Amino acid sequence: MDVEATRSIRQAEVGSTKTMLKRVKARFGLHPERLIADTAYGTAPMLGWLVERKIAPHIPVFDKSGRNDGTWTRADFEWDAENNQYICPEGHELKQFRRTYSDPNRGPTGKGTARYRALKEVCQACPSKAKCCPNADARKITREEHEDARQVARNIAKTEQYVISMKLRKKVEMLFAHLKRILGLNRLRLRGPCGANDEFLLAATAENLRKLAKIFPAPQQPRKA
Image (tube, rainbow, N blue to C red; front, side):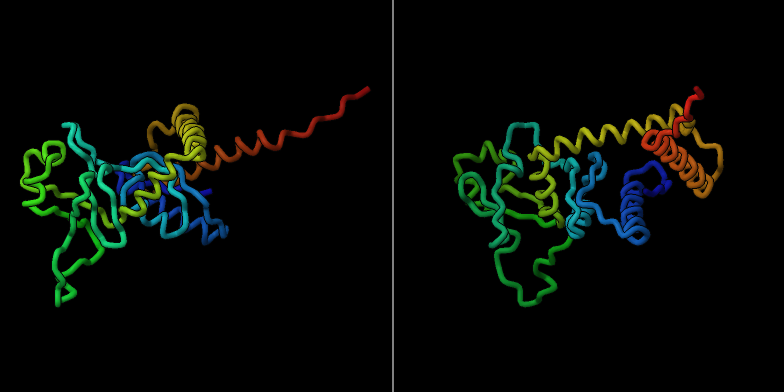
């Protein structure tokens, strides 16, 4: 449907995905129901961008909130969206702000990363402190701006359709391997971004023609009696 050549860095690849989705919609009026990709595309801003446009992200979430020391992770805390707070397994509250600001610019903005804290005296008296924050006075949890979109992706990852999507993703990756091994895109021969884009476009055209040849076989010549 479209091709966009970029540098081999995650930010550029994610940006090219947005460009191609917008361009396909403008040219052909097509809007996908879901997007299948690997973890590199599972960042919070990308997931938020997809969910805002009603595109289901069949993408593993890029998440580094896990812990390897056996203590409670962020997933063990319950999110209370109505009161804008987390609830720990012991039932205590972790809040971002504990007073009302007269100046709205000093209060919660809903942008960037928010930090939620429990009260120090509550954590010090908690019987589960060793499982929660053994090396800190109180437990702190950060929440991304697009955490709701990240949760949407996590919920999709538990469905049967997600398993099917991961199998389909492997078929697409096979096409990339074919471009490198058969069509010679293991290295570029033209210089600059424009040259790279021309090579990608020609390679994708050849790939589409190969697919069309399989879908529409050549007409059979009638045999002479």
